View (cartoon, rainbow, N blue to C red):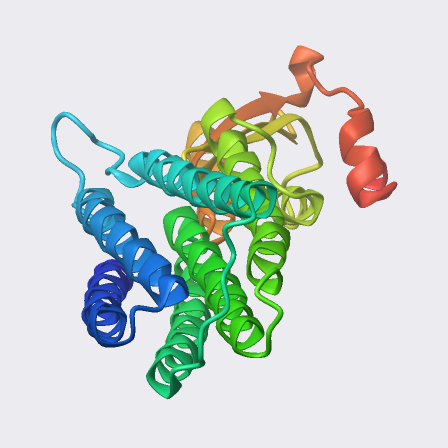
Length: 308
């Protein structure tokens, strides 16, 4: 279900962007509004990279195969970085146009066209709906690509608002509001690109997950009645998913079958976490002298580890 939901989001975003290109293009053709024309070009660019995103999401949701035994989810951070490049390009273009217009004094006054206002307001409404839709599915599927897509749609709300300010400002005899508003919006767009890059770099370089998730991983390992402690716990991102490895401490009089069952129980308990992909557990019998304190675990879960 989650894979179908992810692909469906990509298709919906692409269809919405294509419809916006048509609507803005018609208004631009009939009114000559430069603000709407810029928005039409923006939506055309959105449609182009939405097609690439849809292809990327299709690849990431394919089942595991011989060449990719863990599946294809690790492609997602690269799809997100592609979105970030589009965001940076859009933000840079808006900033350049804003600065150039002010310095060159090319802003002009034009009457407000109701169709131009209507299409820009409709754009903001549609993009807000897409933003909420993408955020909702991203939270359920933990998809970084959909999170990036949601942020990009949020940007489009800002650009539509800036264009609307320009249209209304030009009609009111204050055409300079157009480039000024666009310049402010461009800074927000560029910051969103930075957010997308920052989030996905963590996935690509194998950063540790949030502290609350690491605590939950350790708690699940220590919750087993035969586990007396844990150490050398490592949790890190491999793509958007998390791999976990840890040593658990058990009494040495357990049979091989019992040790196997303990290990299996701990693995299954940790794998129940949605974000976790693989879990590797090493069993340390007490008599081998490998039990040891782990300051990281003590900091995360307190003294419960030592008391067991």
